[in-house]
Length: 89
Image (cartoon, rainbow, N blue to C red; front, side, top):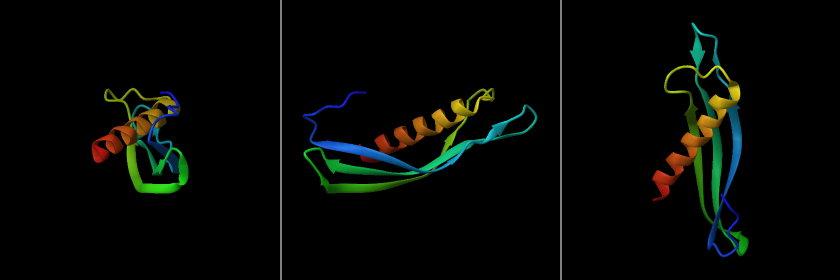
């Protein structure tokens, strides 16, 4: 990622909730995040183009070996980003 000064729009993501989940072998719960994506004009951040709410973006490892909390949470952000891209494009 880079901060592109010539971009017409900027997306700002604000996390509103994080559920870290858990994985203790026999029991597990996915992580998930909620947040708000705000698209603004890069040159004038007061000009809000769109506000998109992201709810319950899940985070887990496909193989079920996501014992690390940071891994589950990072996967929740990855899922949120992919879902946002699909929604926008």
